Image (cartoon, rainbow, N blue to C red; front, side):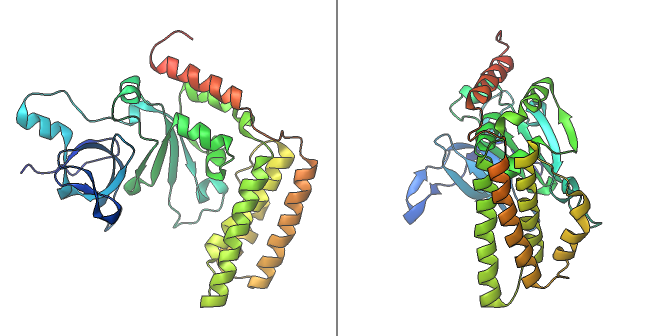
Length: 307
């Protein structure tokens, strides 16, 4: 048995040493199936998330698989089968508390980004994974098509990526994307931002009734989400930084407000969000055609085809 390298990362192609089972313990893939690592373990975790060509994903320990390159090397000389993610990253930014202006000395640095799958991976049997996560580096990268799809659905995390004030990397293709980022903004923001906050506040109320506790950090971010969503409808951009609301929001995180005060503020924000929806000049739906044209142009660029 060959030794596993310690630097298995998102994008590494692997071969299973065990059969992969799904629900009801049914065999989904036999021993020797090939997949690609899409998420690495964090801290004391021991499992990697492996994606197979049919889209099935399984959580496996390092002993349950072998790096494809090493597997091939035992048989014959083979080209490097490891997909290096970084050369294909077109955009990387910092999100989370540091981007919001809510960071403290203990805050993590959350990295989010976009990668443009190379044609050989996009066209291969493996397909291009929609997402790579590396918990050790607090990073997550979405393949461009997945990113655009989520942006068109007004996913809050994705829209905040497009408007993050802390950008670490942007290629010319990413510059083109940022130039049309307003095309992804629409009145759907009300449904996604406001809808998510509503559902999560209901869970907080249930926790308060059942356990007598409030997750104050979560409550703070929900209030921030309501503030951001309403401002986006009014301004036609996503104001990621909280500005003058910083101290009030951090006071919520520290549990310095009674729940009744936080609940009253969030209900006020829900009403303000509805008012912003009535006043907004954003369209009802995002510009799907602009996103599609951009994606095709990016794919052609990656394949070195003329525009």
